[in-house]
Image 1 (cartoon, rainbow, N blue to C red):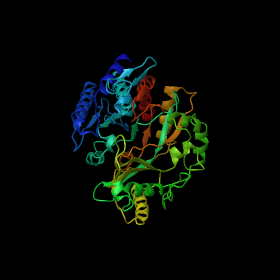
Image 2 (spheres, rainbow, N blue to C red; image 1 turned 30 degrees about the horizontal axis):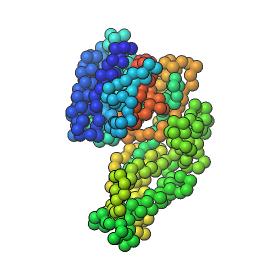
Image 3 (cartoon, rainbow, N blue to C red; image 1 turned 90 degrees about the vertical axis):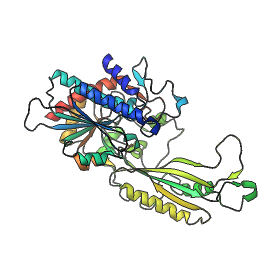
Image 4 (cartoon, rainbow, N blue to C red; image 1 turned 135 degrees about the horizontal axis):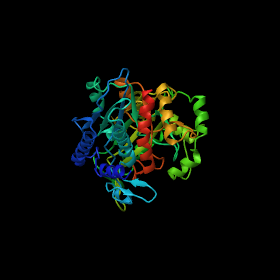
Length: 451
């Protein structure tokens, strides 16, 4: 493992922040490092430029042609989130730190460099063991834009549909329910987004001279945002829940046995008390119910002390986590229509809307033939006595719908990150025992899929 961990550390050192143009060269350098790694493994590798950041593709070569040989595509990303606020990191985010208890801390450790690199090393070991004759053909597709919504990947998939044709897609960009608990994720929420800007006077005004004569845009925005939920946390937008499918009985029964409950979620979040849609547990609300969140809000004076102004404008950023059957574009229109109706009651301000990225919800059958193969592989790595956690997750991987529609309908999500890995936050971590388990899982999974 020393060599494996050393290579992971090298991978994590690249500040491959895709959303920041100042790091464009770092993202490209990280993609080039991956390309060279694939070539050193003996894979046929290519770097494909896009209008944004590069996509790296690598594939195994058949040494013994075999009838009905399956092809497995393994997807991941090498770009990472920004590190702000930097002062909250216990160690520099791109100087990986390994603690005595086997936890590596760095930006991208869990999301997604540690997880995709476990698959890469799994193939490297398997190639050495089999003299290059794997039980399946493998294609790696590793992009540099996942953290900004994969804007160029769908076009790339359509353009290269034949070259990327596969029988199943494997992704490790999700999490494990608990330490040592093998996990197969079969559903993710989709996402929609909307930004609202409220404008009032032509400039910031002295609140003493003009206060009482004009409507404060921040006050107007507060009224708009407060209309989005009722007092119990349920979204108050007409039609928002119309397409939401109820949970199946087996899901409720299975989830009730998992080592995650309201108390654990409160502990992980640090919230004084949990809050959300009535009639559902916290796990059910996170995994199987849609949400409308206010992610950012701004306007007026933000500095130290007092500045007596009526601001000229205010804004808020909204996102919606959506469950299977909901259509992101339709939900965005519903929310915008709701806000427009409320805004019509306030003619003293102007309201503008702008959209952001969207992604379809994802759902697959964990009991399919490939799903059962994944469960057998998990048993082999984590122990036959371990019950497999079949879960949904609350996050989103927007590109999954494009993968399903363009390349292959079946996707296996085998997460290796821990619930407290702090992805997207300061001090992101990855458990090295999961890194090692991911290497073995890759090999067991390919063998099971070959059956």
